Length: 213
Image (cartoon, rainbow, N blue to C red; front, side, top):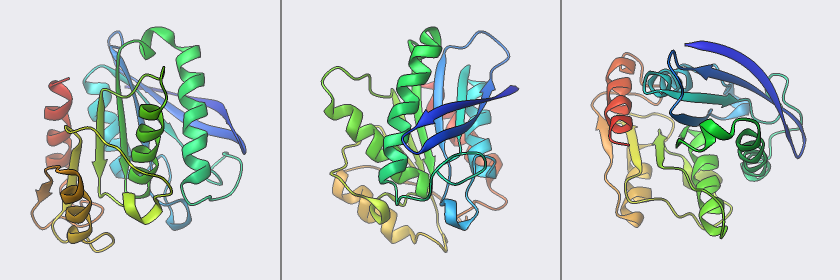
């Protein structure tokens, strides 16, 4: 996996991103969104990098942005509203800069706070008549409802993964979100919010899901 840094432009200034490239010719791309910026969340979070490695292993370019106020990204935390708007800008700019990769498979993934931005980004794209929607949505440690500002529509094959003993977002909260939308939930026994000691299992789940695209 080769990494390079790039800056996209969001509505509040720079969006500081890492791009992780697969060893072979890319077959598409992935946008991977990090946890809560005010609680240490950043693009180098171990769950985010685990998702990225799974994506690059399946031939995707993985884009890991820092949200507003994190690293060299401009602006301040905006409770998922501004962050979602910024990601819409990023998608448009990535598509223009890398049309070949953007024409391939597209995976949208998020962890914790990042799941709320991911789900609402997907919903916004699905509501636009001519927008391309992601081919897969993966939500880990889902906290969609905590930062929801619009109606959320997610695909039937959304991958929801949650830790059995998540101390930040209780499993019951993820189950409520899934129940309302008729989605299955993959529960990793004894796993905490940050999946301590379960990253290998988590990566295997991601790889299996990505292999089906």
